Image 1: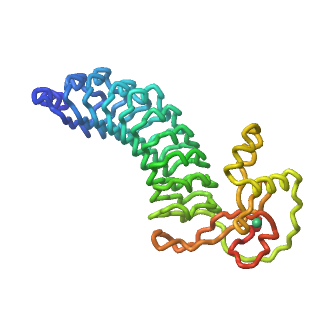
Image 2 (image 1 turned 30 degrees about the horizontal axis):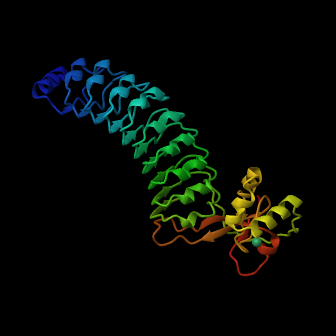
Image 3 (image 1 turned 90 degrees about the vertical axis):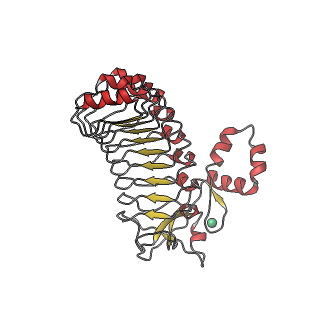
Length: 341
Ligand SMILES: [Zn+2]
């Protein structure tokens, strides 16, 4: 049955071949002779490997291997240099062999949903043209920072994994429009997320988040999903407080940073790169706008979501850092202290 289809395709010098849902255990080797083939449909079969002969398909742009029984990436894929779209959902992949990525520099779309991946290899950064990456419903515990080198990436889908955090390098994904990480175990979102100027959709529902990064509101989100997180609630209680005692290092650092403008900063510390590195970690107080280095009060501001954001009617707790109790006790601001349970 499949052989008949291949023969017919050979005679017609076909560009498309549909061998989907044929209970195939192996792909007929003759498929390798379809040199003009652009699209090959192999989903819903019983494949555990691909024949070497497929490496001759130099015009193939679209390959669907979804719902098969692959346990490893077939090595032959690395020869399919024109491949733009690759479906591998619903297989049994538990790791991805890095060598395959060498030849897939033109890939734009990769679907790895419903596999058993616990990690992604660093070599994923070789997929320089990748725009859409789907790794939903796997066992990922982390994602490599190298993933953040994929400059073209527009959509990253990582729902239903075991992620505890996202890499700080996520700020390098400057073209990211959609970040979907619901149903993981993420405890904190990196502050760097807030510099993604093109981000339109953020889905972090069903994680372990208490609070959002300081600059969350700088994002121009059109959709924001964050239900089912243990978010801080606005339950006011009174508390006693002691004035903080600052270290000499902290006092000095605050003084120096506030005295220097950012220009003079570089020239003064040109010969002291270590000092510069330390001082670059300073943050600004949300109330007085002055700098601090290692000592601060972590506070929370409850923000009403803007109308543009479709959501659940909950106020959003956003982190705010204050330099001192003096600022905390000033009237007129909207920052609340956080009571530890
Ligand atoms: Zn202050």
